[in-house]
Image: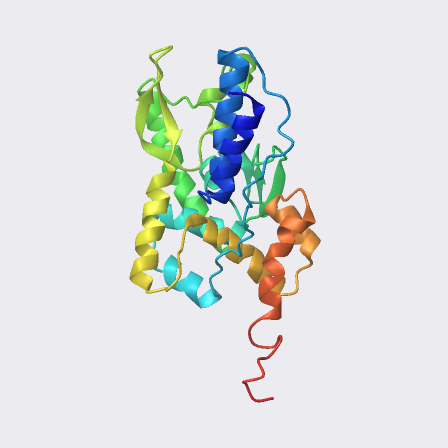
Length: 275
């Protein structure tokens, strides 16, 4: 089959099968890999390909009362992570990959390293979370010192840092803020290390808390980030600042949160409501 047949197949996925844009892109990538790598006969540019449309969807946003209702039903480490997601606008993995050195209590900020988009940024550390986070880190430090006493206590470092800084994996500054409860064994060296908390633990806790709260919305960990941005804009924070806090490269990405500013009390009123 040549370019015409491939074009017809991919177009039929969009028109007849009505697949999502991601599904069509996956099929396209698989075919291109087959022709380029396996068959050694790269396809020409597919000029007539009909692309599946990627829908633009509004994010699910909780009210402040709904956020409070969900967070009140969460405690322990997962509850602290969830509060950081809402209070600092972090993505789930950004929160779980925080290291001790990235939390600056003096300046009330969190440094997010190597996030999505590969652009480091700083965001706020909520004042109300300072003491709970300090208390949590005291427990983490005790666990780290126990690991060191038993001959363990190392964590994985990004890139080539482990080769450049051979002592860093056991230093307190490089430890995870939210470490896993169990150690894992590295196959190459046989050394036992501690990974950060697995994301499914937080996702499961958020799902259970949302169900118990009775919030009639689909609540995920990312919903807290959506709510963080929306509530800042509702308070009158300028969109450029919110863009920086979220780490968006383009302000148009942040503008999707302005959809709530034209709705609700004090904004555009329905003609059914009294003036």
